[in-house]
Amino acid sequence: MRPTGRMHLGHYHGVVKNWVDLQHTHECFFFVADWHALTTHYEDLTRLEENTREMVIDWLAAGINPGSATMFVQSWVPEHAELHLLLSMITPLGWLERVPSFKDQQEQLKDRDLATYGFLGYPLLQSADILIYKAGMVPVGEDQVPHLEITREIARRFNHLYGREPDFAERAEQAIAKMGKKNARLYRDLRRRYQEQGEAEAIEVARALLESQQNLSIGDRERLFGYLEGSGRIILPEPQALLTRASKLPGLDGRKMSKSYHNTIALRDAPADVEKNIRTMPTDPARVRRTDPGEPEKCPVWQFHQVYSGQDVLDWVQTGCRSAGIGCLDCKQPVIDAVLAELRPIQERAREYEADPTLVQNVLNEGTETARDVAGETMSEVRRAMGLAYR
Image 1: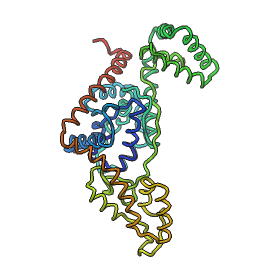
Image 2: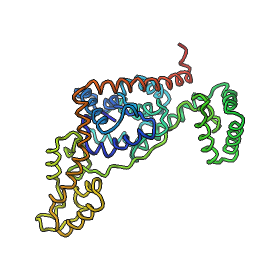
Image 3: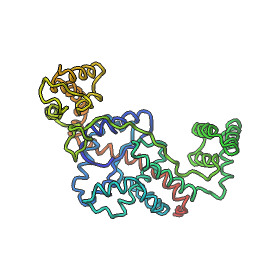
Image 4: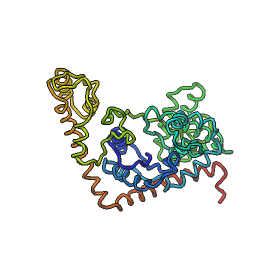
């Protein structure tokens, strides 16, 4: 995530809440994408360090646990830049120019000079961020799937160019022998069924078989993935999209919650400010007087209810609004109570990190060390594959 400073409820419900769940089911890497911030805001970096610290405080306060997930700052892991450079040698310009957001952002950010390689190449840097950890799944919204597809194409191209070891087949057969007679026989049968008959199920079973082999090195496992498909060794696995649901939570004015629209509720806003902002939210314009009936679907507050309220409250709102049985302030009170209840534990945890900045620094230092270990292993393989490991 780009370092934008303190986070709001749109970030929390759209991204971070999902991250909190994922850390318990997957090995997760969450990082501050400070180099990505430079691609569009390179002229003003005065608040970059502050924004990084404030954002990480909110991550921690929201429930991301450094004991369950790796948290770090992108620029503290220079291997990202090295892989980005090496991938730039093989990536056609046309691939970058056709990324949908390239022209979209040029239109939206006309006030900035984006005629830079950094802006053109940011999808490639994003690919390096993913591939350097050999990510199997990347949590994205539907609008980000094209970014992931170019990552898959780059990985495919890299493996095609550099995954062909001179003794690949011999090494693959040696790796099969390490699986034991029964599993080796099953692997060969599945490989034959896939390559000769094109059985999609066979390749999925074979992949699961390889994942379960504890006695295979990472290199042997990736070599056998490639041997299975009839290609070379898979050095950079192709990541898959883990689609996340879009947040239903709008901004205070009904538009997307965004700092640029000044319609946000920040995770660390004072309770009095939260209450005031929700109480002054616009409602159905048809309800000019207290006795005028309204339509919940035309009211931004209703979208908050859909996130925060149970069915009994939803029924109460629909009936009361359409019959003018309740006023707009009555309707807003359950939302105020629910938002404050959600923010209370987040703000309590945030105060601990605000009081001792070294806690955040220690989390990022430890996460960086872990990230560099993983990224370093990948770069060693990449350098060897490209003939750059002659030191």
